[in-house]
Structures are given as structure tokens and as C-alpha cells.
Image 1 (spheres, one colour):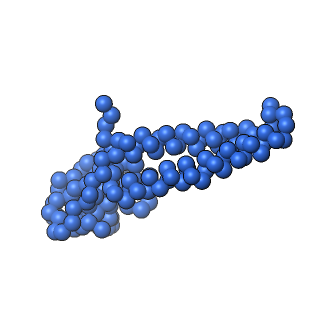
Image 2 (cartoon, rainbow, N blue to C red):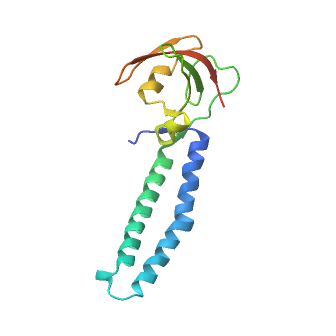
Image 3 (cartoon, rainbow, N blue to C red):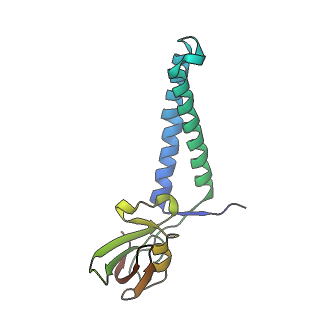
Length: 158
């Protein structure tokens, strides 16, 4: 039995759009590139043909990967209103108690995580530590370099 992949509606839509783009745009483009390369003759020494076949392999592999992820997706609608605890889809505003640095993380599924944009997986060490906590709680996170203590300042659903 396959495990469900938690996802926000936006994350699901992003993967679905990528799949459609690969099927409707990239796949036909690769097929045309292979046909053009075949017209150039000897395939054993045809760099364009080999590059197109390699691209085709990548595109087909990514299509299969996306189809599997979408089939296993469990779309979770983030709550709205006055959030009391940190849950999937919530945005958590934190303060590092040692440095005073402010952080803002949105808890999403692993497929949507993007640390540069403040989107972290609920399965990451930080995500796991934050789930279930409330505003004002101090959360201790064991990082490779040091132990970090954050105080939860606010919980929102952006």
C-alpha cells in the first residue's frame, strides 16, 4: 500500500500544471527533435539524436514521477480563522531566543518545501518540532550545529 503525500491545494496544482506542460509541450517537442535528428543519417554518431533521446528519457521519467505523486496526493486544505495551534499549512512566526532573529515558516508537504521561500516540510526536524505548539510556546530544535530555541510569536494562514 502506498503512503499518502500531504500537499496544499497550491502544491497539487503546481505539480498538475507541470505534468500538463510536460505532456502537451515538452513531449511533442522531444518527438520532433528525435525525428529531425533521424533525418541527419547515421544514428551511431549523431549527437543531436542522442541528446534528444536523453531528453525524452528525462521527460518520460518526470511524467511518471508526477503521475505517481499526484495519485498518492492527500490534498489538505489549510484552516482559516483564528489559529490556536501549529498545523499543516499554517505559517509560523518565530523568534530565535539566542540571537533575536525573526523567522517565518509555512509548513507544507515534502514535495512543496522550498527553504529559500520559507516553506518547510512538516516532516523536517523544524516542522516536526513546531506541529501542535501554540503562540507563546518555546520550541527546542536540535540542529547539527547547535540547539536552537524559538518562541512562537504568531500563527497565521497566508
